[in-house]
Image (cartoon, rainbow, N blue to C red; front, side, top):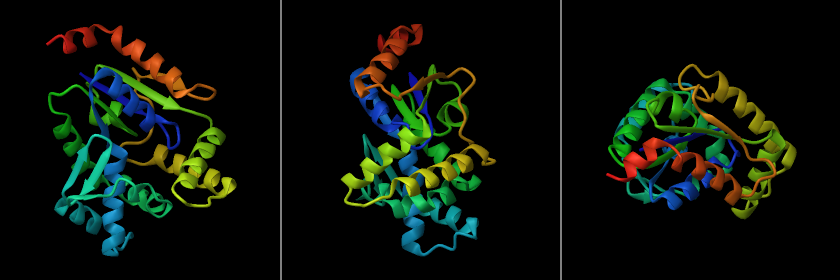
Length: 223
């Protein structure tokens, strides 16, 4: 069974997806980290961001591996590094690159295989897994998402300014929603969850109840 969780930056979808996967005993797939890994590799190689074909060529040579919540780039654990502000600032070059997206969507589909998976990102229910049996779109207000991002960066030793984080996030939202390939939008059959004012457990409880009440869950987990 495939469960997709899409949503904008800072909506809490990664945390929710990990918690839901743990509760259900499913595999967890963080697809956003894959694009961040490509962007990190581009930074390290000094890629010319104005030449998208070079990033696509680099992506074809990379060995990206996802092990639960950890992301590996050519066998190096880059889980923490890909969440830095520097990588976040250039991730759009990977996310907006049609050739990179094509390669990573194929990798995501291969990684999911025939497993029970909770996969999260921007286009999981619309592009990567349109056949998914259960789809969610997790979101929050812009201010709440910026507040969460500030806390996350502070925990990583950075000193972000809320107004700057909010402006960057709003710019990223616009870019994600307007890109030609895999734009950020809810799947037509996705259940939308607004997480403002809800604890993690409350959000996961709601998703778990929806999932376990579906006939697909009973069928897939009984096999």
